[in-house]
Image 1 (cartoon, rainbow, N blue to C red):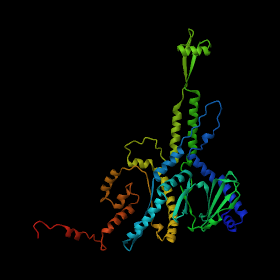
Image 2 (image 1 turned 60 degrees about the vertical axis):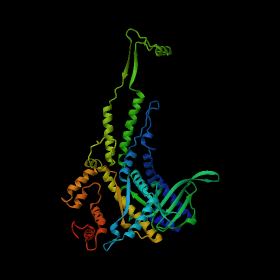
Image 3 (image 1 turned 90 degrees about the vertical axis):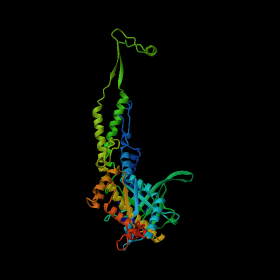
Image 4 (image 1 turned 135 degrees about the vertical axis):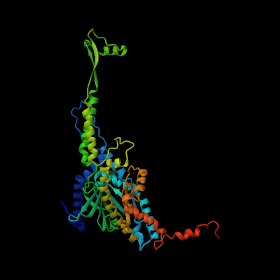
Length: 476
């Protein structure tokens, strides 16, 4: 197995055969290991792959329905809609307050630049899809690049096409290899080749294989220094263990599919009733059936009888088992089954309890994402500082993940009015579901008041009001 030092040494030596062998070994190992596992989870989300599809039938003469229930995508999409519906990125106004004076000019200029950056990169959509991919396979990657106009752009890339090479002692990424297949035409024939983009903190290199994982450099005139001076591929973790959201419930999903499929096959194969004809003389032939269709009369003897044999299915135990499996699927995936009837009069506290598992999962992902977003914008702002003359402090950025949470704002507002003046403002604000950070909200309120305050702390409004008030009746 190649170590990080071995890989770096091979790249630095730049011997074609050794580089090709190293790339072949890395890609084959990744495709058979982590890359394959991540791609399988994506196919499960797309409902292209499920164990029930590969079940061997007990008999080819019997009905064998194979139905996959889409729990996987439901769990992922629920988290995406709840957590990733809006990820807003703002500038911290306090960072622009120096010696008690708010620098509105710099603040507005930096905010405009950030707004244009968000718009050009469709940030809201890409951030939401980043949440989806991380919940789906356990991790997601974002690639930063410079477009033809010299502007910073980014795009989300498939995690099964990325190899992150880390320092074994510090667990920090040292190199990133991105590979992907594409179809080319050579000599009039179409074939699939693998392209490789190799990034380190100082340079980027490109390789292509011959269809058999024998690599050679290409576009060597494009080989250049890494403009960012940092790795431009950023890892976004779903959690510390990089596990997909529904992963712990996959055995339960497979059991649910098996029960549903087997029960459906049983009903379809045997049907629910069979007709029996007693003492018909066993003369049921084509002539008998034609006469029956015309007259609707069974010609039977004196002791003859026609009836049905009904098949009684014990559906109670099946329903109970399916309900228990379904409940455990959502419980262990830290999600919520939205098909349940929660009732129209469910208060906020009831929703908070119902969504507690999902909220805990989202909080973990949110912390991981904030860390990665901070790294992303350090790279972007460093580039702006060097090439665009925009000095934006990455630490001045605030990241807010707004939950798609049912709220009773009217009731909470009434409660807030009762609390204010009874307890501290921080405590009162802290009880509100629509206020994420009580201290930040208090600071924002104070900041909004600042423009109306004089340097000595006086509002400066009293004299203006006295001057503008009309004279009292009867005065000169």
